[in-house]
Amino acid sequence: MSAEPLSVKSVTIRETSGTILHVEAILGMPRKPRAPDGPNGSRPAWIEVIPEDEAVGELAALYDELRSPQTGRVDHVMAIHSLHPRSMRDHQQLYRTLMYGPGGLTRPEREMIGVVVSAVNGCDY
Image (cartoon, rainbow, N blue to C red; front, top):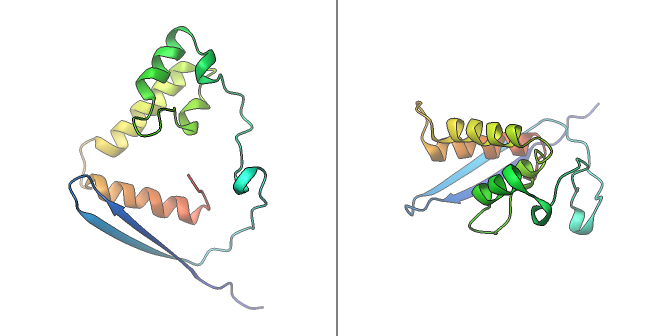
């Protein structure tokens, strides 16, 4: 029985301050190959969502609040909460607490942990 080859993930993050962070993770966990389900190998969410252009009331206000200034859209990870706007607001609060709350890690260190965990889990997000 042969061991699975190790893979290396390398990530460079440029902070708005100009600081450049470089992370390399050596991953030895076996990964299942992912079959592409959509265009460009993307895997669309199967969770029912209310599209941004159909949102009304509290959901429309949340979408406006959470819309990315870079893309002009709401991230999919937030839109999956569209049937339950309270969970969307709670998810955003959890994210802000984890990424910006007090603690012993800097924001870039927190981002690096997220990148490495996503890579280990085979998550492209």
